[in-house]
Image (cartoon, rainbow, N blue to C red):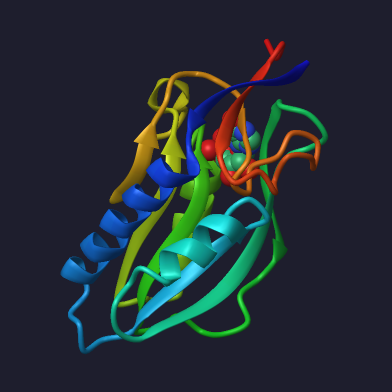
Length: 175
Ligand code: IMP
């Protein structure tokens, strides 16, 4: 297996993230803080670029869940590895995800976060693979919808590699 073609360049990603930042602020009143929750590890690059494109007050926190192990196959089980540091009660929360694949991770996060009484809860994902969805889960902001490909870069890994790539590329040779 090896790194194949580039799917989205740094410039294409930056342009789309600027649009998403503006869309988020259109949905959350400008005098109210946006509380961004990044899902580790994959969302760390997207988070860094997205928060700089949201006008007004932005606060952030991090949550970590297990998804894939070493490799490209999902276990189908989601576990909380690191919880939030602060309460989200009464806040406008945006979950920031690198990619929504089966939707299992996101539906788990919805369940545990809605129980904490946020004022609103929305999701921004950089990438989405709609054809792979196993559970229906709302995603308000999607960077790009893609085919059933295994992608790396811009925070996304294959066995912990490639997260640092500034673009999104396709891994060849994964079934
Ligand atoms: P889901 O629970 O199946 O929606 O999976 C979500 C998680 O799986 C993402 O946050 C990623 O960490 C990982 N994932 C899914 N597809 C890919 C991919 O194409 N490349 C790298 N990681 C992926």
